Length: 542
Image (cartoon, rainbow, N blue to C red; front, top):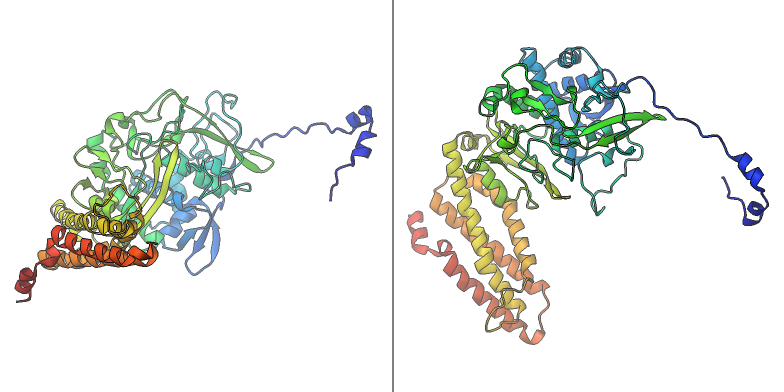
């Protein structure tokens, strides 16, 4: 172990001696050849079906997905999963379209040919580190003046490049990837360039979101958890929807720019939708990687404007995984609420036009609604949200056409409103009556009831879609009445929880309980009459 000299011994060293001990600085230069070629080097760690692990290049990944062999990517973080899935689907669909092929079930050698054809046979655009700066590197546009002098200081860790904002260091620590492998840089680049929003002066975001504080959600139908099956399904859907995506937005039918990192970018010029392929893979930041002492680092620099001038589209770019609000023709922007039942029922109804990945396809049977998003705000992250909702095969027609979607949305909306009425008009005043010791007049500004309201909402969320699917084939009025009684029963359970958990002076406890129960039952009969209509129930029984 190296030891620091003692104060005494340090003090006896003469200045001349100390100077002679200094070593001459070692000049470290990056290598002059490209490094980490995704078309040829097995950089991506994958977990295969059955438990084996393997390293694959990009064509190998596409082949393995086509054969449904991949269970997961070992270095891929949760918030990067949709970005990576979307990148692979768009890339496969672009390559297949250019080659006039349809099936994504290809050998790695054929995928390598198709991807190389997109870059005129050159491998640099698929390589992480390309020292020849006027040439493109993977998701890194050319630097035509050949120098990084105007770029910012070098970022040595891949998560410093990623889009995740971790200013408070709570859930995910910042700058923790001290020994990042090339695959970490691959996923960070994909996440940054295809998902990032506006994050301060000269740092513009992607075109596929509504405004700088928006988000790029991932909503679609998936045949279970198999990555390969979803990849094949979404690739086929994207290929078939090219014309539908292109027409209203003015993209090029053929010959449009598909891989935006191939084009030089000085930070001032901008592309327009008329320049682009309908499934273009975009970049939003000027960045270049280098290699020093075997370790990758990144240099970034701002731009005077966004890479794509698509303000008129307001984020409605035809992204296969983004629902678009019909009334204002703008894409869905996530909030901290994520995909609660209150949010998701609207996205499945008639208020939103679904992306092509969300529309049932021939061959779909038992599928899941998959909803993921990294919600963003101004200078903050509003949480990563993911939800999977199984959909029975016989109910897929409800998601397939606008008429049935409208009925589904209305049916689900009634149930959401019932839950809101129970929480606001029944459970809240009853809990407050107990907590406040049966006062003559309730103080509705008292926020202590919030915990039980949230718990009730979570219980409603837990059963909402399972009950919704089951009731679609039943008599609507009777099913709604039963739902009202279920929501009230869940509320009664929360009121009982308040009796057990919340401290109230013993002298007033029993009076408070009696008052709370009286308030609950009276409010239930006033605001949820559907649950207390014996004549209607007798008529249905008959």
